[in-house]
Image (cartoon, rainbow, N blue to C red; front, side, top):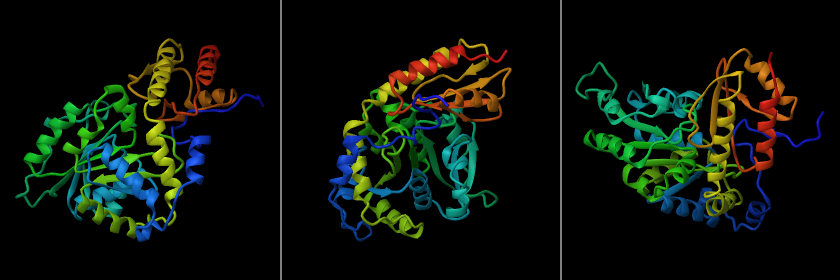
Length: 345
């Protein structure tokens, strides 16, 4: 067994709090959040809402919960949600759209998970035709996990929002890694509040807190969402210890996401030159997706594991690597050296 520190690129959810974040957590002022008495949770909800130009926020245990609460807010059983076929809300939330909301899904096929206004327009059902479910919600993801970290610009979002408003449809954002997109585009997060009815912000990915996401929306939406959170079992008591990590992350970990994105691009550049790599998806943010040739994903991952490196299979012949705040420049150089040296001849 090698003595080198493990490099874990399976996800940006594997990070652990650093000294500053731990200090913020242990020093947090807390209360019972279910009773509306945790000041640190309230501070996080307000801070996140203001960042995105929204009225209110709701702190929850996970991004899956914030997404599912939003879908429940906007839909009724028998209605339909429009999203891309790569969407996290469809692929990775345990069938929650059907289980929690009783809604069906209209899956679109956008390039790398990015749908267009025209696609949305063409897939809105005629509300007067009783053979089809009533279209109730359009949902976007930024960045797109299965799209290799692809992202929407504000101009693209605005155009989709216009279609939604013409048809009186709410627009939801699964913003699991939205800050990775924002540091690339340089766009103002507050503009998002003009186009989305609800936004899910995951703090336990690129921003590196141990647990938690925030759902943003109008005061009325969040009031309704608080009741749904209770039904789903998501009410937490002295949650301020976790919320304090979120406040710290918003103040210290956003701009440094540029480092994660840059390191991911360096990995992509090296992978493109390797004989055992068939193709590399464009690396827009902190996710690297690539397919293999002449070697199985099992064999490739085993070879990495022998070098104390972890990645994850993302299909029958594909691998995903995700950079994050616990992946240093030194680790990057070690990874690149291993990738260049291993052979499958």
